[in-house]
Image (cartoon, rainbow, N blue to C red; front, side, top):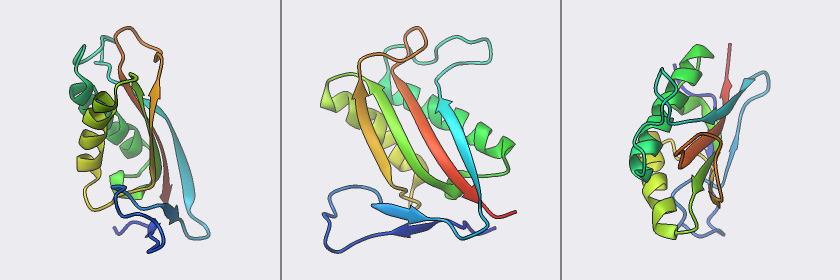
Length: 135
C-alpha cells in the first residue's frame, strides 16, 4: 500500500539537508505517535554500548517493530527527531547517517539534536517519530 504522507520541498531552501523540509497527511489519516525508540534488547540490556551507529540501527529496528504494531511502516512516518547523547558533531552524524539510510527515498522532515543524557544506562541514541496511515 502506498504511503499517505506527502513530502514537501522548497526551491527557496538549501538542498544540503538530507530530508524534506515539511510533510502532510491527508484528511482522515490516523496519526501514530511513537515513544522514543531505544537501543535495548528483549532483556532490557543496552545494545552496541559506545557505538553511535550501532545504537541508531537498533533504534531503527525498535521503531519498525512499534510501527508494525500500529499497522504502519517507515514509509508512513511523517517526521522524526533523532536524539544523540553527545556534543560532538561527528557522533550526531554517525547516528544520522544510519537513520537517513534506513528511510532511503522517504526522506521525512527530521531534527537531529545533541543532548546531555538519555534515559537508559549506556544509551547514546533515541529516535522519536510520528506516522500517518489511512485505515
